[in-house]
Length: 577
Image (cartoon, rainbow, N blue to C red; front, side, top):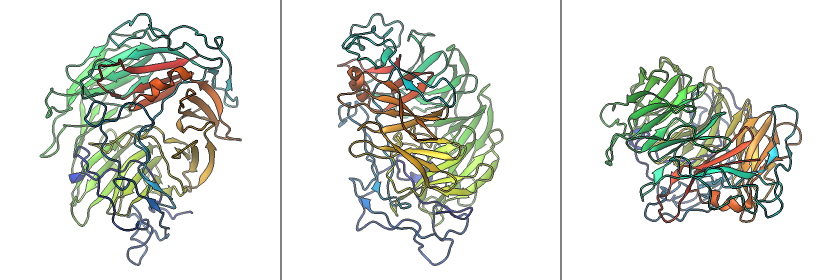
């Protein structure tokens, strides 16, 4: 269905959160009560006659009626319960497949379904000859350095806890590796963490170094053999935020707390070079006005601009020297408070306006990363909350409406921010999003990939295999879809050499896989790696995780430490030929 320009969209997914007081991303969120009565129709049903009263944003005529999608109620009416991290009271034991999609719906535009907030990507890899950059060649699985069945090709290199060389591995993770399977090149044990657990955010891979944050430490390993590339950096207090992306010259910003107490701010910033471990500038983030604190922050990079978001405002710094560039503050008569930011090729701001009033709504803006000047604004209708950005260039946004139990995925033009299309595919999607407990975390979904004019989304599979759907951003319609090659879920990771690289979760009797799906032609998945079954349970034990495929190697790490002293938990594993 083609929509007129500057119009609101209709389908979507993600992990919806209750809007916090004031719209700031630092406010706690409370799950809503279960709905009463039958589901309400999607937002395309006009509330009053006229073409300007439907859709998630009020930017122009939108008279396309929508069909109500059935809404399968889950406990908490589709809004995910607040997660209990490992180590917290009532926490389920590690392992399993993570949380399922809290919304189930038939999306004929918007009823329903938000996405699974934590996508379990356990598994291992397939030793293969991967794409060597030749655009037309398909990757072909090969036996490389294959052992005899049941044999071993050598223990993983340099296991340890991040404090240095861990010595020989007393437990050979490659034992029993079968022909055609990849091997564990190296792995690292997690550092000690409090019994209540600790954060282990971020994972950055350069052509030389794999870097990981964990509790108070930043550790770095050679990508090939796992040996420490520079001395572990230990921060005075626990790490509380990181930039997911790195700068063009391979640097990241790490934020750590100002103290140990519950009232400690997440306001200490440190620039670090990923290849050398050298520290650059250091900066302290000030609090904003009343109720606008740096108790929690979000950070994002756009070129040389580091944007740090507080609960109701943001401050931009020059990442090269740490000097302040501008503030993103309250604006307008509503008023509007900056609530979250997304970076990359563009700098986007989500503002929460008129909290608690008749004019309550969200606004999406693009900011000039050097000056903070607003380039364009899209006003969303009351009741629509912008939850995620699946891409900033092109701009692809996911929003939810609690009252209507509806969701929406919209694409906008980059230069002017005009409405471009909305997803109209009738599916439940599950793009693997982090829990956004105290923040919107706009860029917290790893399993939504955008390339050119196409959005790639994984469907939710309650049992058996799922699919990845390619959606046109020109019209919101399905281009094609591909089914997981096994009876386990598949998640897109990136586009590389004209192919969609995807990760297939392991099962109880088989390791995970990395596959390449040609974006043209027959879209048949070709194996790049098949992980050894013997270590699939280790990856499945991660409460939440980050994955990456770089230069023919597969990396997986936990993003949350349990603090369990009974068993030494793993921090990170690397697989290869």
